[in-house]
Amino acid sequence: MKYLMAIDAGTGSVRAVIFDTNGNQISVGQSEWVHLAEDGVPNSMNFDFKKNWQLTIGCIKKALSDAGLKGTDIKAVSASSMREGIVLYDKSGQELWAVANVDARADKEVKYLKKNFKGIEEQFYQKSGQTFALGALPRILWVKNNRPKIYKKVAKISMISDWILAKLSGVIATDPSNGGTSGIYSLKKRDWLPQMATKIGLKDNIFPPTFESGEVLGTLTDKSSGLSEKTLVVMGGGDVQLGGAGLGVVNSGEVAILGGSFWQQVVNIPCKVKPPKSMDIRVNPHVITGLSQAEGITFFSGLVMRWFRDVFCGEELIEAKKRKIDVYTLLEEKAKKISVGSNGILPIFSDSMKYGKWYHASPSFLNLSIDPNICNKASMFRALQENACIVSNINLKKIEKFTGVKSKTIVFASGASKGDLWCQILADVTGCKIKVPKVKEATALGTAICAGVGAGIYENIAKASKKLVVWEKEYLPNKKNTKIYKKITKQWQKAYKAQLKLVDKNITTSMWKAPGL
Image: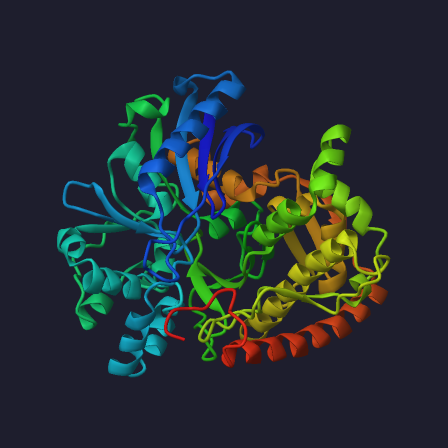
């Protein structure tokens, strides 16, 4: 039997996952990574391409070793990544500079663009579905202004999954789903818009060819990876859009929530639907031709859980190890004993999405009590779970407002969907049926599907998706709890608004602020 490999470069980790051609996960090699700020550059988030490539190779080799496979057993490989992260190359294809997804260093550049090109962000948003918040244009302008020697050498740009495929194949290219998140891309034409760069005085000849997800780039040229020279290297895409493919969310009107380091709420819409004038929601090209995805983002939901685990749950980590269970499983056991609403605790972390003016309050918990029976690790943990679901639901309501799409079913996947309690809370908050797939790593499966399409194993992404996705569980909402969560949502929105005012007055520090605000 031949096998397919997916390399998924997320915000918090990189993993190589091997699947058989029936969509069964065989093995995984995973490594956590961090993206550090650059000395003297506020709000920067560098992507260390030298170190991170070695971590990627390590994951590939571990996945092969754990599966007892050789490189020749892998028919094709594809890649996905956090969107928005970019890599700049010189004319020989060597990396010059790279940043991860929420790098926000280009504060002055965004202000410059808004001041000197009136209405430019709104104009570009209507074509690309992206604002300057995470866009590539202000970052490239930052390089031009602050690293002129590097800028002079820049000959190509790509996204991070494209970088992985370029390392494997020697071919620098992009696809619509990931390239589209650069903000220099047309939703309608599914290709670069170099005239955007021209308009603001940047190079307009650095944009590589566009390949659709599932198209073959070439064969493997990197001998250090452990894969074979005969392994096909196939265009992948953005983690969320490929996550949709890995969840069977490939038709217009279908809805999914991916609960990873960040939570994304996506709704499939025809590509002819224009982005909303409010600029609250982003719109991205899907990996399915003819479709876009309206998307809300909840910042740091998974990373906040990791922080809570590492800082507060030392005893639980020891107990979980003794019982040979995951620490999150243990925490959910305890959180199930806490009533709906988590004894009134209101977590203040990610705001709902306001893409045109995007910033967050200072991280905090409100309404804590010094009574340990009311405020404890279990109640705080449950409050974080409830909050991620509440903010996701607010984003879905915003998408519904401009698309008219209202689904009674939501597909839920990635790490958070492993939690039985979290799934039920999501059902109760949204009032929707929640479907959880057998393969939780939806992005990896969607990426493997791309590899399989390139290898000729599957006819196309949509058909393979519907065939391979198998459902494991369903959760139905408790209507009584749904009413309670509606009240909590209103309380939280008022509380968050008040917390933002503290940031505005420079009393507290924003968890994250888009450049230019």
